[in-house]
Image 1 (cartoon, helix red, strand yellow):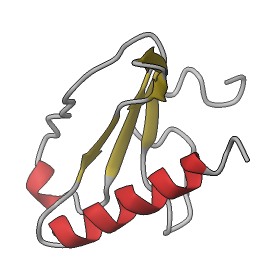
Image 2 (spheres, one colour):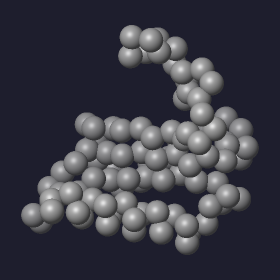
Image 3 (cartoon, rainbow, N blue to C red):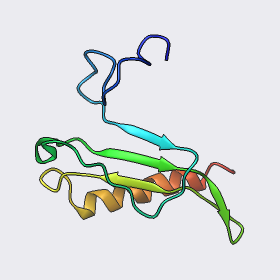
Length: 95
């Protein structure tokens, strides 16, 4: 925050590695859907992940995850595979 907190933008740190993509957290909010409207978004090919506040429902701890992807580089099969792998990792946290 000291170095880049006042820079703004999606990538405030200059020269990010090529294999980076945005992940953001809204720790004060739960949601069922989340969308970012990007200027010239049709040209933006990187996935964007947004996580929300962890909450308990019916004895289960839940955390919303929104994934915004360009269909030209990611389809439902790949996104479902990613979500399944994330869920499997989270399921092992208590072990």
